[in-house]
Amino acid sequence: MRRKSLQAIYQSNLLFLFIYYSKNYLNLIMKAYLRIVPILIISILFFSCTKDEKTEQIVKSEVEQPNNVGPITLVIHGGAGTILKENMSPEKEKAYRDKLEEALQTGYKILEEGGTSMSAVVATIQVMEESPLFNSGVGAVYTHEGRNELDASVMDGNTGKAGAVAGVTTIKSPIRAALEVMNNSPHVMMAGSGAETFAEEQGLEMVDNSYFGTERRKKALEKVLEMEAEKTSDLLQYQNWKYGTVGAVALDKKGNIAAGTSTGGMTNKRYGRIGDSPIIGAGTFAENSSCGVSATGHGEYFIRNAVAYDIAARMKYLNISVGKSAKEVIQKKLVEKGGFGGVVCLDRAGNIAMEFNTAGMYRGYMKNGKAHVYIYKNPSIN
Image 1 (cartoon, helix red, strand yellow):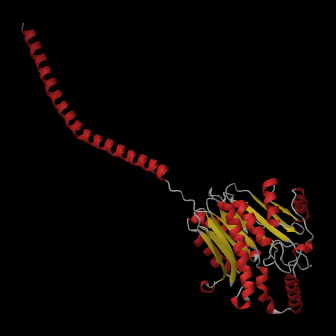
Image 2 (cartoon, one colour):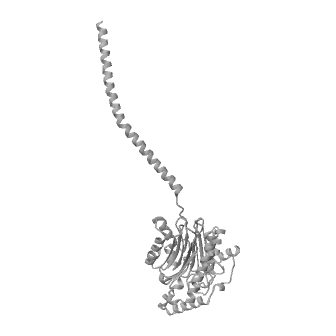
Image 3 (cartoon, rainbow, N blue to C red):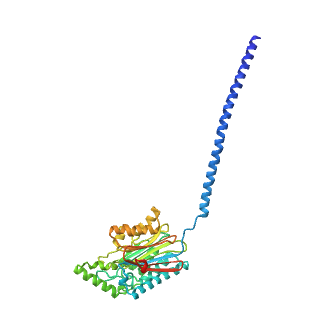
């Protein structure tokens, strides 16, 4: 009997201890729960809101992303050099202005009608190739041997494809030949007789080399040869003959950029010299994500410094405007290296740059249906 009583007391004590400690344990759990739950609720709400905000931003970005493609635009150049108003007769100045505007109107009409930027570039340059005013096609300068050797290139900013010809002497339109190289061959550049054979196979018009010659360019060569023989410093006066080239950059309705350049090269050039004009990245470059560029100037400097590509690369990697990029390359980098010339550039938003470090550059652009033509460095006399 006594043993049962002790056992009952022992069991009741155990029950008491269990209840006591269980109660304290539950209190601890409740306190912890009351502390943790609000934190969990706040965290869940915070991350939920953040996720919603991010989702909203992504959706907003996708839905409201602005269309940054600008209006159809065309920008051209007809060469840079020692172009001074005091050396230009009113009749000659008018002839240049009229031809530049004709080139602009020709290319812009193609863009207005929904044509591609490449079609506009080629047609624009062909107008200047057929004019004796410019150093490309008819009116090209003479080599040391007294003939005309022509270079040209094109690049499509949408596809990244390009075509070029160099040192050709019988292709009527070098810029058209460059287009055929791009469209109908696996190559980028063809030169000399091989390029001429290819052009003929593509059905392009071929001419005798005398087609390109003009009396003005012949006299220029004679003068340079005379000064060269006399070793006169007056050769510096003829830098304008070094820099003659024509080019164009266009932006079409689909937002695609194209660029092209055509030239007769440098007066008195020898040994099959090739300048920057047919070299992609030096004289011509186009890329939808950055800009299109056509250059004119002392080709060796443009080649060494990859001028056309450098302008596009600075835009892309330094995130600067086309105007700032062109200025940095032409007015700073090129000048520091001793190079002279200019560029016309155009980005996908329709922003243009016409930068040069010479006394003048035949240039112009057309946008919103209005053509603008310039020749001299000083805006007040343009």
